[in-house]
Image (cartoon, rainbow, N blue to C red; front, side, top):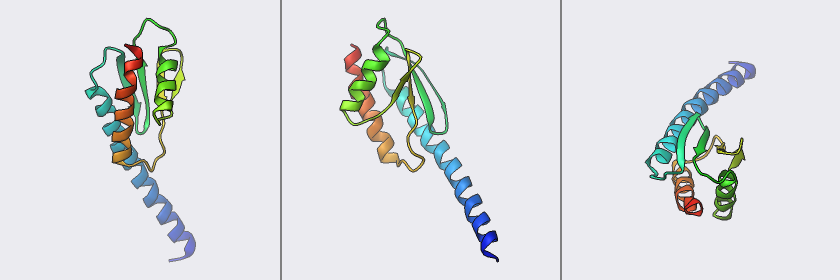
Length: 113
Protein backbone atom coordinates (compact mmCIF):
# COMPACT_ATOMS: atom_id res chain seq x y z
CA UNK A 1 0.00 0.00 0.00
CA UNK A 2 1.09 3.53 -0.65
CA UNK A 3 0.99 6.06 2.17
CA UNK A 4 -1.92 7.81 0.41
CA UNK A 5 -3.92 4.55 0.43
CA UNK A 6 -3.15 4.06 4.11
CA UNK A 7 -4.19 7.63 4.91
CA UNK A 8 -7.50 7.18 3.08
CA UNK A 9 -8.13 3.84 4.81
CA UNK A 10 -7.30 5.35 8.22
CA UNK A 11 -9.56 8.35 7.61
CA UNK A 12 -12.45 6.17 6.40
CA UNK A 13 -12.07 3.81 9.36
CA UNK A 14 -11.91 6.61 11.93
CA UNK A 15 -14.80 8.43 10.28
CA UNK A 16 -17.01 5.33 10.41
CA UNK A 17 -16.01 4.69 14.03
CA UNK A 18 -16.68 8.27 15.11
CA UNK A 19 -20.13 8.28 13.48
CA UNK A 20 -21.24 5.08 15.20
CA UNK A 21 -19.66 6.15 18.50
CA UNK A 22 -21.36 9.57 18.33
CA UNK A 23 -24.68 7.86 17.65
CA UNK A 24 -24.18 5.50 20.59
CA UNK A 25 -23.21 8.29 23.00
CA UNK A 26 -26.03 10.51 21.71
CA UNK A 27 -28.57 7.79 22.41
CA UNK A 28 -27.11 7.36 25.89
CA UNK A 29 -27.46 11.10 26.49
CA UNK A 30 -31.04 11.37 25.18
CA UNK A 31 -32.22 8.29 27.06
CA UNK A 32 -30.59 9.64 30.22
CA UNK A 33 -32.34 12.99 29.87
CA UNK A 34 -35.66 11.22 29.31
CA UNK A 35 -35.14 9.30 32.58
CA UNK A 36 -34.86 12.58 34.51
CA UNK A 37 -38.32 13.22 35.88
CA UNK A 38 -38.72 16.98 35.68
CA UNK A 39 -41.81 18.94 34.67
CA UNK A 40 -39.43 21.47 33.12
CA UNK A 41 -38.12 19.13 30.41
CA UNK A 42 -40.69 19.37 27.63
CA UNK A 43 -38.80 17.67 24.80
CA UNK A 44 -35.46 16.02 24.06
CA UNK A 45 -34.23 15.80 20.50
CA UNK A 46 -31.01 15.33 18.63
CA UNK A 47 -28.85 13.40 16.26
CA UNK A 48 -25.58 11.87 17.29
CA UNK A 49 -24.00 14.10 19.90
CA UNK A 50 -25.81 17.27 18.80
CA UNK A 51 -28.77 17.44 21.16
CA UNK A 52 -31.29 19.94 22.47
CA UNK A 53 -33.66 20.09 25.38
CA UNK A 54 -36.78 22.26 25.32
CA UNK A 55 -37.48 23.84 28.70
CA UNK A 56 -41.07 24.34 29.84
CA UNK A 57 -41.24 27.16 32.37
CA UNK A 58 -43.17 30.40 32.86
CA UNK A 59 -39.89 32.32 33.23
CA UNK A 60 -38.61 33.16 29.75
CA UNK A 61 -35.08 33.23 31.19
CA UNK A 62 -35.33 29.68 32.58
CA UNK A 63 -33.03 28.11 29.96
CA UNK A 64 -30.42 30.81 30.59
CA UNK A 65 -30.65 30.36 34.37
CA UNK A 66 -30.33 26.60 34.03
CA UNK A 67 -27.27 26.98 31.79
CA UNK A 68 -25.63 29.32 34.31
CA UNK A 69 -26.30 26.84 37.12
CA UNK A 70 -24.95 23.95 35.06
CA UNK A 71 -21.83 26.01 34.29
CA UNK A 72 -21.29 26.61 38.02
CA UNK A 73 -21.62 22.84 38.47
CA UNK A 74 -19.09 22.03 35.73
CA UNK A 75 -21.12 21.62 32.52
CA UNK A 76 -21.20 24.02 29.58
CA UNK A 77 -24.31 24.25 27.41
CA UNK A 78 -25.79 26.93 25.17
CA UNK A 79 -29.21 28.46 25.71
CA UNK A 80 -30.89 29.34 22.43
CA UNK A 81 -34.25 30.67 21.21
CA UNK A 82 -35.30 31.42 24.78
CA UNK A 83 -36.53 27.98 25.81
CA UNK A 84 -33.97 25.58 24.32
CA UNK A 85 -30.60 24.36 25.51
CA UNK A 86 -28.09 22.89 23.07
CA UNK A 87 -25.57 20.27 24.07
CA UNK A 88 -22.67 19.52 21.73
CA UNK A 89 -19.92 17.62 23.56
CA UNK A 90 -16.68 16.56 21.87
CA UNK A 91 -16.80 13.42 19.75
CA UNK A 92 -14.38 11.71 22.15
CA UNK A 93 -16.67 12.03 25.19
CA UNK A 94 -16.84 8.85 27.27
CA UNK A 95 -19.86 7.08 28.70
CA UNK A 96 -18.82 8.07 32.23
CA UNK A 97 -18.58 11.71 31.14
CA UNK A 98 -22.09 11.49 29.65
CA UNK A 99 -23.31 10.07 32.96
CA UNK A 100 -21.58 12.88 34.87
CA UNK A 101 -23.22 15.47 32.58
CA UNK A 102 -26.62 13.88 33.19
CA UNK A 103 -26.06 14.06 36.93
CA UNK A 104 -25.12 17.75 36.67
CA UNK A 105 -28.22 18.46 34.58
CA UNK A 106 -30.49 16.66 37.04
CA UNK A 107 -28.97 18.40 40.06
CA UNK A 108 -29.08 21.80 38.35
CA UNK A 109 -32.77 21.57 37.47
CA UNK A 110 -33.65 22.52 41.06
CA UNK A 111 -32.94 26.14 40.09
CA UNK A 112 -36.21 26.07 38.12
CA UNK A 113 -38.39 24.82 41.01
